[in-house]
Length: 303
Image 1 (cartoon, rainbow, N blue to C red):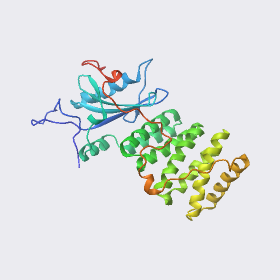
Image 2: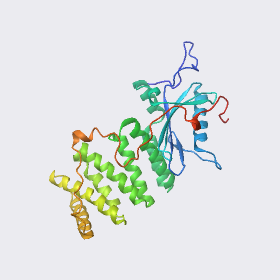
Image 3: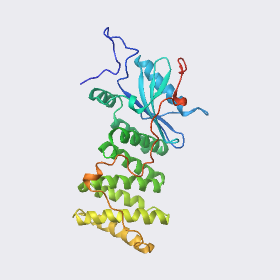
Image 4: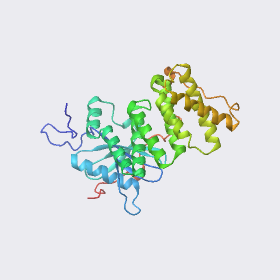
């Protein structure tokens, strides 16, 4: 089924004052790297991220001839901004309760316009070209927005987090990779234990590269608890699984602090489904109206 992205009036002309049908997304990483709809923006000079985002979204509004909604996740400020951007370049920020209501037509239109799987393919292409910074930022943007829209337990959200963990591993960011991979494993253990073993394997591979003793002990105890849970459930079917579980146990015991802190309890499936944001995700400030850096008067958009 096809859906028009442009609201039209009765004469089949673009309705300039119509509410937006789709919502774009933007992301600002902690290092200032900026993504709009799965594309990393090239920032010239000292151009602020908010100006680049507004220009990109305004171009889309002009192309549609209609207002555009946008959700911006800014990791530097740990804040969500929800915007309305108009074809004349003006914009305003809104509160969460003013955002687009759920709707099947809008959801289908958004996913047809900016398919998550196409973004995954672009991330993989960057990684294959060894453009690991771009791949990592794009994966983070995808994971953040999918988690916000669909929840952390959604299959696409989990896949994006797993990809981000793998790229962090390729970059040598083993602390970040372990945290991301452990979150995937934790969620999988809570909602579908039968599919958890590969995720625990990936988390263990990243954990084995850690050098910080505190991280080794804390993360290792959780990993060991996961391996023991899989073992009790009879889900360690590969010899390599048993070997990895033993390697985790041996390393923790060698550290000499295995008995200091009991392993963290994993949530049962019924409780895990209620988790909205994994503990590894730093919380974002609630949306509010009138954020000045995203507010423009008419005629401010770049050509």
